[in-house]
Length: 272
Image (cartoon, rainbow, N blue to C red):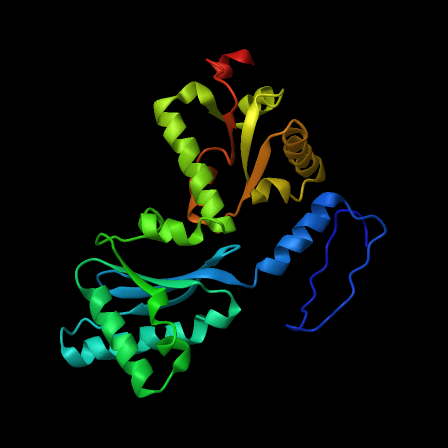
């Protein structure tokens, strides 16, 4: 195949295959190792809003597995039918044997308690040991009417569960960056030019979106890959944020690249 081109192949799940290449760069090898973790999730999140329920899996990336719309009819039968659909989605997508540590149920009001009770009752009726043996792994979080994953991740107990995961690390690092941006703005910078200036021994932590280091434009991809390498070589950290995570979405709004600095650099934007 010509350099820079690509071809799509469908590979059957769980089927071994050999992938060969004349020269493997360390970045590509690192990406392959990371992809091994992509099929597992550390956390499952069920969010109830006013007229819907959503089931997410959070791991190497955040995946919306199911969205169930509630009936407009306000009756016990309609509520049970809605809960049944969410229950089935939970059973289908949540697997405690495949890495899921916890299921977080978030909602305004009492919906979370009602669904949790329904879920345990159904699991007992259907003799579902996978749920009955893991009741302690279900936790509830109160969120607003327009509840989101961001609210879930802001909960201290939830962060305690995922702090050592990739998702937890991204959330923690982005929070540190955003706090400094508000309280000590000379200790952070964002935007390609400012970050490049700070690369000279000043970067403690580089925050960079995955789409920058996976660009189809080879020259740009190499530029950002080398930037991350230079930060690591100088003793800093380079965190590649997933575009499928809440923190990644926030970083994308800030030019997709930012840095926490070792020391303050006032008016860094005026240096170029």
